[in-house]
Image (cartoon, rainbow, N blue to C red):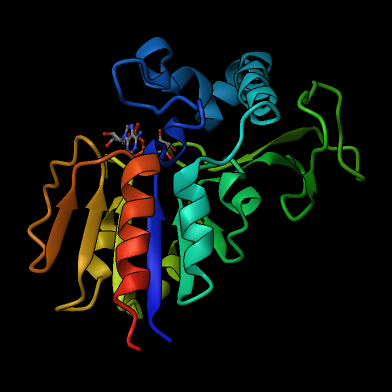
Length: 231
Ligand code: APR
């Protein structure tokens, strides 16, 4: 079965009501990420960091997958689909996608600051100072902050190297190592970008750009794939 790898970014969830980072109304337009998404920020002002992720986690309980997420889940009926997402929301999973690899962590998960192997899933939105792991260590967001390692990048590279099609949706491709994934698509494998403002720096040989939003462009592209299936 053909292997489709889908690299998604914040634009995938924009039509679900979740802000992106670098659009005009993006998160980094109203916050300094250095104050919120770095280990130094956590050391300097843990309450401010907790508040930032609590607000985003709270919103997660109020939003739903959009037509783009749902179309990707439908694709799994006919292809071997692997989602590699930079997003920390759970909208791919809630839409029904089974194979989702998070590069930058998960908003609904928290982990011990004293034993990182202790990871917990939250069923409520608020993480507080004083919320501790089984060993008594303060819990922190299970998010990859700027300057921290991206543990799943090796697995992501292996997946892209085996892809028969690489679909890239809603990412500015400005953050590494995630952005480097596009370069691991095997020679000749089609790379399709779906993004209303796509302006890729990459000069991939077999690149197609669909300047549409995720909720509009992804269902159309998925239907195109499903209708071109060999009889
Ligand atoms: N549909 C598809 N794409 C969209 C939509 C939409 N409705 N709205 C915006 N976009 C596109 C923008 O044109 C842009 O290319 O989504 C992209 C969003 O880019 P960023 O805000 O930079 O988000 P992303 O690429 O996911 O950022 C990568 O940076 O801050 C870190 O860890 C954070 O995972 C994040 C990483």
